[in-house]
Length: 157
Image (cartoon, rainbow, N blue to C red; front, side):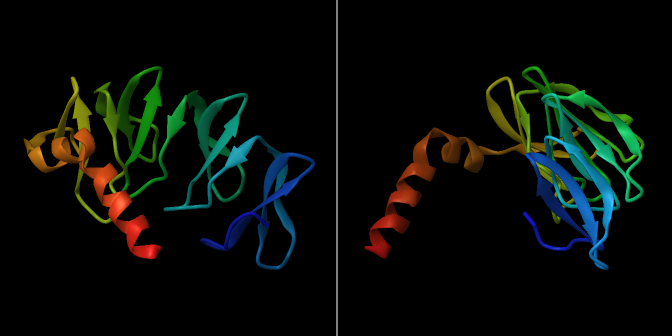
């Protein structure tokens, strides 16, 4: 096992391929993927030949291997990357946020997320509308995170 049980399945590995085992200990989805995430909102990210797509709990590929990188689904949305551009899709694979961003974080626990557009950090909603400029994130991106990490490491010593 390479993950914990989520939504009734666990990610397992055999001979460098990834599959899914159910709680009864049966291989429910065969070992065929190069990488995979656990299930979230009924779908799992699967990777084959460096492209990501999504399968449902029956193992059917419901969103094709089209993306260079993806997040899991959170609040009905997954952030996706093709080349250097990020956007977001819904569970039907429909683009709901255009592929114009430098980066889009996942929508975990929120109706909004952080995104980077033309080098600037912003906050967007699930339709891609800009909520506000996000100076705090810009500062974070410009080096504050390194100081915070050093503070944490120094406290542990």
